[in-house]
Length: 205
Image 1 (cartoon, rainbow, N blue to C red):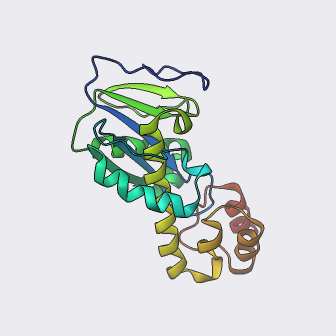
Image 2: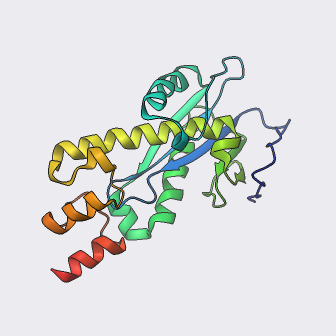
């Protein structure tokens, strides 16, 4: 069963859990692109300095930390739920699905998963949700960095496919620029049609 942890508290290590995975997502809020999740089991023998919530790190710092995490972690996996899955099942369920896929993709099966936030995917291991875990738990911080860098890279790919929308600048979020391009060109296949701003545009056509 999931258990909420207050942001001001440190998460205690369960002595019965040999491997603990941090789990986080990237891309719940944007109007376009897949939602990504990552799971990371850190190696205590190879600490990584500078781990933090990906949102407070610069892009340059995230890009520097991501390969270090991949090199030094005992196990890591990045997974996604597609735009089609988001529109079919809603963004929360798609996010939980991406998290589940990330944990299942680890080459080491964790005994415990620390999941950022207060919603947890169904997993075969025990789960502990942690509010603001990406700032409190290094393994969750590492997962947030991998998920964010993977999604940003995918948005650059989408920019190559659909350059009119400026995905390289706003990464799919509903900025003024993005909304202006949406109104000018209409939604492209990468847009989430179940999200209200996109749905309204489609209904007005």
